[in-house]
Length: 172
Image 1 (cartoon, rainbow, N blue to C red):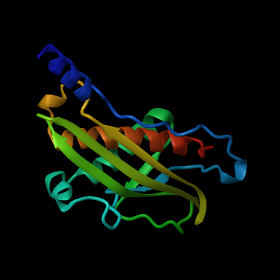
Image 2: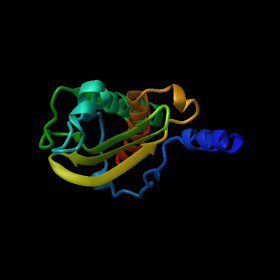
Image 3: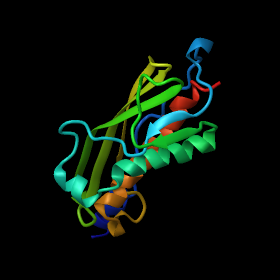
Image 4: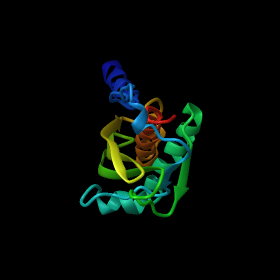
């Protein structure tokens, strides 16, 4: 019985796992001044998530945008959220899409959640860089007391931090 308890604690203690984005030396012509436009609700790609996720966690894509903006402020990148973004607009534009969101398990048997996004950064209508990032979570400490949306929220929070750090490479 004690071994089972230890295994359950180990399974539920995992936080978000993935590699953080790499810091790059970016040429001056790719650097962006001023705020970077960011959509206030990141869209789901075709087939990216079950309808159950979208129904039960209706603000998960807004949280991704909010966490990106919040972490951007922490690392010195200003994001300007708006209803829509136009990649051909003047200045910096960040176009993101949730390409996969997986939710299996639960508080009793252990969470298994992950989110994958694609991010494209534009400067004056020209694509500067693209990245694809994934984060997964078993719920972390106290996972047995967390719901699925809370654990998915952990993945998008960390992805917001990853995107902000990645975008920082391109700020003047």
